[in-house]
Image (tube, rainbow, N blue to C red; front, side, top):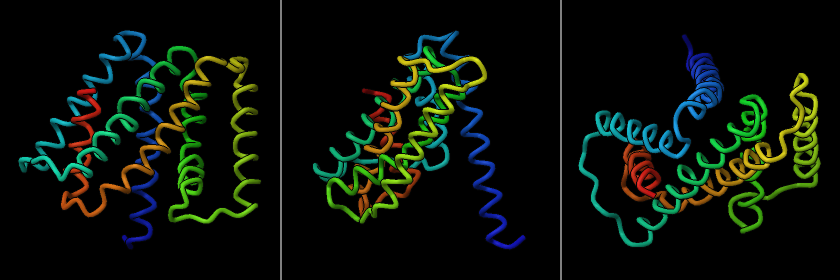
Length: 192
């Protein structure tokens, strides 16, 4: 199998797994306290990442360690609290569709802080169409309609993930592998 097809296949598998997590999370936040669910989920994730990359992780220089802590706050604590509250007050499909807009917020945040991206008027048109599509899907959701509180928390989750994606850029060059960096983010996010 050539690398392009293999890459597309892996991306499809990742999207399917990611999409199924909203359904599983919707069920689990009905059973478990949504905050304990986050702690359990990321403690387990940290453990499996530790098994995958068991190297002991020391504190990084002060600036990089604070960057990782902020990543834990934005990408684990805030994102998943907002997502779980959204799942309590909205549907899994609304929450999944709305949080999928996070790359747009990443680009907007990068642009707002003058980092690595130059946005054109076409981007802003696309952004408006995307957000309009999110509202159209939310309002027409097969009789479920808009769940204002839950859908607002889902949008907050998308923004939190956009913030995480921008902050993580500050950890580039930390000397950690992706698995090690993710493990540190999970540690701080779970702890906080």
